[in-house]
Image (cartoon, rainbow, N blue to C red):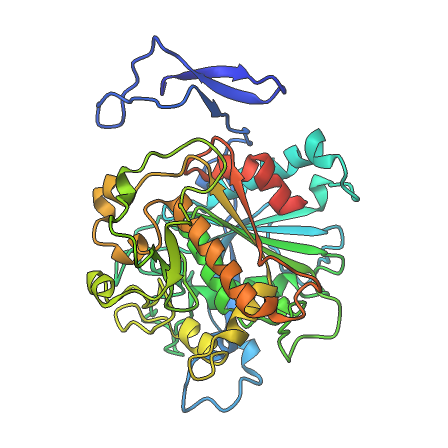
Length: 472
């Protein structure tokens, strides 16, 4: 094994303890030096293979692809809902989620799990389905809850943003599964809202952003004809999936977010489900302005971030007494003059085209003033989960070298998360928390450290903090 063996904690939680007599090896045959005495243990789910579950497709209306594009030929999207350009692949614990012959009146909670760079949507379906069952039995979670959680009331959907290299099962539909480039112009393009790959057989000659496809999925669940009793939709993503849900929540104009301070003016009058977004362990964030945390200007000796010791405590790793949120100096900006281009910031980047994001957010920015964009994002129900042990620095991973925009946000995922969250509080105070968000609001969003967990979606989601974020 990996040098650990099964055990139970003092509170009867399954854990793994280090086996000092083992000599584990990694996949290259090199010795593994385990750092921790104990590790969390996976909550097992029903075993299945990719071919043991059915893959479904959600048709993408042509209107969704046109809604955010500045097309001179587009005067109205009326009537285009009946025309489709492809379908988004997904797995679900109830099968096809939209049908003409079934009303899903039992569903009260929907969990949409966004996969990471491995595009392993099936494992997200597996983990989240098992976690719904576990949450219904978790005594520490259920204590104080006003409502009973029944796993049969929970819909789990795991969209699959496929790439040409994926082994996609054939579809009986005339609509092809949508695909996104996994290599160009940067890795995992679906995570930043890139356009899908143009299908040579598509008579409409149309592509759609992965975020636009996400809007269609969300709005399918907000359809009261299909889900009349749905109360909550949770969109959760880890790693690259965490980047996805963060950037999508920042840029989406979907009417399903109608309960926010800046409600979409076309939102239906019927009561909408609450939409909660859970951002877990993303590698980077999209800042809303050009400020980052830099060493204070009068500090003579710069802090060597990569050499700083990383503790197991739950506090902050950034010494905020030594840092300030400010625009970079000329010398600092010379280290990375693209630090504020999208996907790290909101300046357009011709190398990373994202018309959905740029066009949507520009509507809310008035001559450089991001107040309305910030307040809309702040009004949305967003929680950030950070693995306590997700502290690997960029310099420790050769494949991440050159990602200076990430480095400007902090040396590790955990530290980037705490700095971004801190920046939201600074901007919130500057804007007096946008006046009406939550009445007496004194904080923008929520953030929680997941104890003893590093970079693992199943352990993050099944943790007490993960369960609380989804079902609390």
